Image (cartoon, rainbow, N blue to C red; front, top):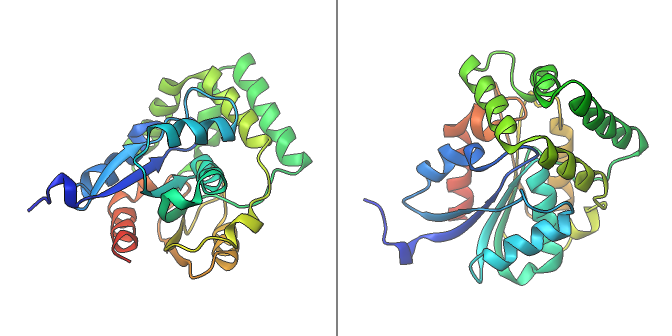
Length: 235
């Protein structure tokens, strides 16, 4: 039986690059009995600090925080800005380091290609890195449709925000709340070693790798991700 709203934990879910609330649909439904979720708005700012400030302005006074991919970078920024408001933190398919020169060049090249050829061309060219090869075709198409709905200008702004992100390893070392680090075991975009790195730098962090799963874990393996988030919320 669903709990009353007053008994559910406030939960802020932060989407990744070119993602919106669609990313978290399975978790919003699957955690409704124990959590009161809010989707963090990452669609109207062009820096990670500004995204974090916008989310903090809309969020409850204290909340559990989960960020996926770029949303993980935003979650790290929220922790830097207001650690006292975060009751627990989860990082999904993300990394703690800053972009090096090669990674920044690749992001800029993707923006240029999207403007010249189309965002859809970039997305479809990236699908092998975004989803597991055995993922349902409907999942891959949902990823493309979500990103096209978010649009080219937001994609470009978010890529530039990601390029400017700082290294967050020192911030991870100061985390003193229950922490979950999760990744698709076959994630090619942010390989599992990056999740292991985050877990190694985060005191007491629990590491979970989801099998038969690429980068888009909340959509590809929604039920498994929800189970791990449920355990984390109960920790």
